[in-house]
Amino acid sequence: MSEAATLQTQLQHEAAVDPVENPLTPDSKGKLGMWLFLAADAMTFGAAIAAYGALRIGNMNWPTPSTILGIPSTAVMTFVLICSSVTMVEALSAIRRDDQAGYRKFLALTVLGGLVFLSLQAREWTHLIAGDGLSIKTSLFSATFFILTGFHGCHVFGGVVYLSVLLLRGLAGKITAAKYGLVEVAGLYWHFVDLVWILIFTFVYLI
Amino acid sequence: MSSEAVAVSPHAVAHEHVEPNYIAIWIYLGVLTVLELVVAYAPIPKAAMVGLLVGLAWAKAVLVAMYFMHLRFERRTLAVIAAIPVILVTFLTFMLVPDLSTRIYARHHMGEVVRMEHALGKDVSGSNPNVNPPQP
Image (tube, rainbow over all chains, first blue to last red; front, side, top):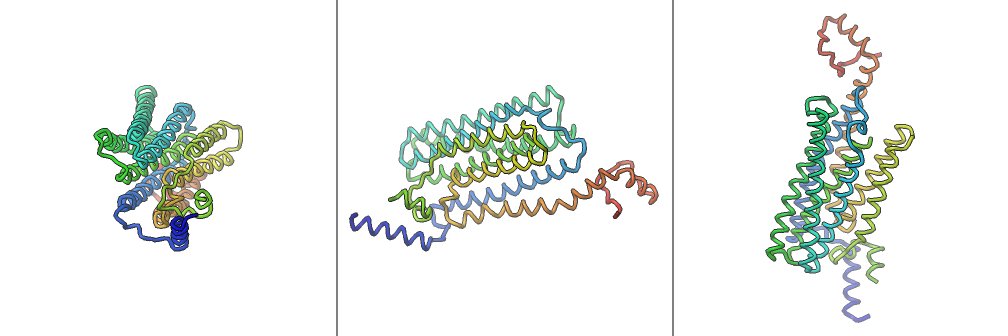
């Protein structure tokens, strides 16, 4: 092992023993900001889900969700969102290597995943509203369902717009390896939306 | 050498380019989703089903946060920020317990409550299920 490599290993070891706890370095400000936003957003979702649980436990006429909602099609939506999270990390991985073509391809697939999810949700809502005559005023079940999935759907829509902007800038050649932080921060948002859907799928659809 | 460093201490290479095996995480998430569907349709008691489903959902959420959001490889500050809403929402859920107990009590003793409210001369036409029940 060369002397330089030994020194580097030693430096890494020191970093492990005494990690530099300074999140306010210029390259991580965006990440810290996004995590703070996500923490606040998580509390909104958490409060909404907790309120849903309280209403549901306190209501004796709560229907079994699977009798009204389509579980198989929602499972497909869940899988689409998980796949779009994987393409998002692949896009980040590509731009870190300065692989522009890979970045554009995987980010486009991520946006596509978001659009497929929104289309399936629009189809589901259309079926429930036009077909079954449900509205937000019908019952506590429908009110909590539309609020939780609607609030999450707004997040997916916001994410699609956010990632589309990054994709357009990528197509213009404006995103380089030096700017991978922008992609990482956008990825945090997208994975969070995926994470929240995992919980909504369980609490609203499966249980 | 470097793979050993990752295994022993993720912080050691936090500033380096750390990449978990994303495809493996994808497969885990897929398998957990299939397991959830199996549990949801399995003929098991409701309480066991709810417990299993919540556990599986949290396992998936933790996988996403740790590996896709890189929390496993980040500075501790971000993990603390991520933990705060989890702690507060858990606390909020427990704060809802007194409300739930009155609702469940009212559900079982609705007739009794209505009679008592009548005796007190209160209007019960709204039949709010969340009325304060009398102490047993």
